[in-house]
Amino acid sequence: MAFDSKVQRKVFGKWATGVTVVTTDGPAGKGGLTANAVASLSLDPPLVLVAVAKSAGSYSEIKQNGCYAINILAQAHEDVSKRFATPGPKDFSGFPWKTDVTGAPILEGALGYVDCKVREILPGGDHDIFVGEIVGGEAGGEDPPLMYFSGKYRRMAE
Image 1 (cartoon, rainbow, N blue to C red):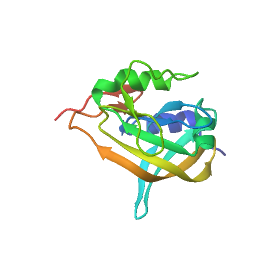
Image 2: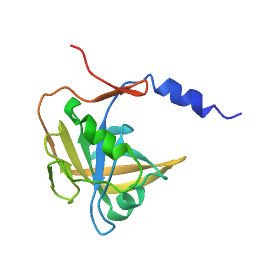
Image 3: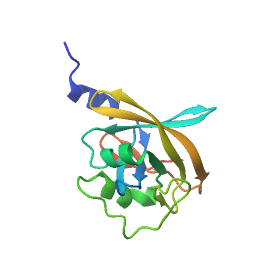
């Protein structure tokens, strides 16, 4: 008997997470999505992973471009998160962007970012796990992070 996905969503909704926007650019075009299924995987070699729904609008761009950047969002970036969480083509206007090694868009003012080349794609049910080799990155300021808990954006208390 399969575990109820509604219960799974409710259980993991109790796991507070940081919020990122994963971006890409290349021959398949520019794309981006809000993600919290992100993890540092290895220091040697430097690897991270992001799980992306196969149904996500920017899934094919990430897969075909072979690169992505993970932008770690501050509380002030809630509007960025909401924009990239909606279905459909992504609008990058109105926010300051830069690039590093791969050309994937990097949000200026993010708490930090890693710029990655896709090293491996692993199956994960209705998602694929994109293992990225970090080729660039930077830690940003000390602003409070944007958090997500129990279906809502939250703020950290000291």
